Image 1 (cartoon, rainbow, N blue to C red):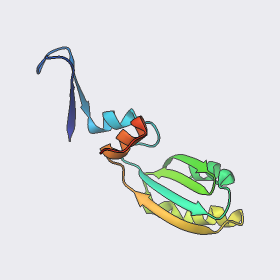
Image 2 (image 1 turned 45 degrees about the horizontal axis):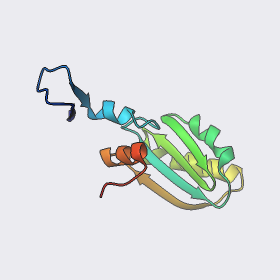
Image 3 (image 1 turned 45 degrees about the vertical axis):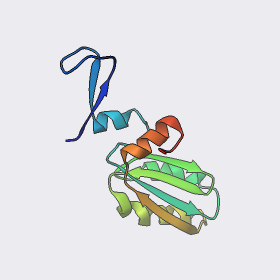
Image 4 (image 1 turned 90 degrees about the vertical axis):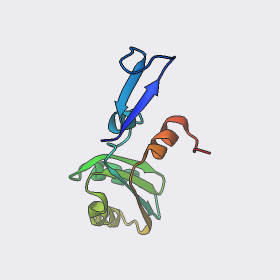
Length: 119
């Protein structure tokens, strides 16, 4: 398991001013899906608001967000949920325009916390 150490002041190991966090603990600070979830982004040809609730009900999904034509779904099942998302779109007469999968990283956590990319 990877560990991240955040030091404050000049304290060393065993000092009360050092905070040790696991990668997962640090990632939990970013909100959204679980750190081990894959982000599945499906772009449709229309508003995805009606798809968010059905997506949240899928097995293995921890969160789903509708942002205009973009549906963002966090899932432990990764790409296995794509057919169900396409079917949900079909049920609302929406056509898929693009699909993107991305595994979470500490960089994506940094962006979610600060709103900016690393230089």
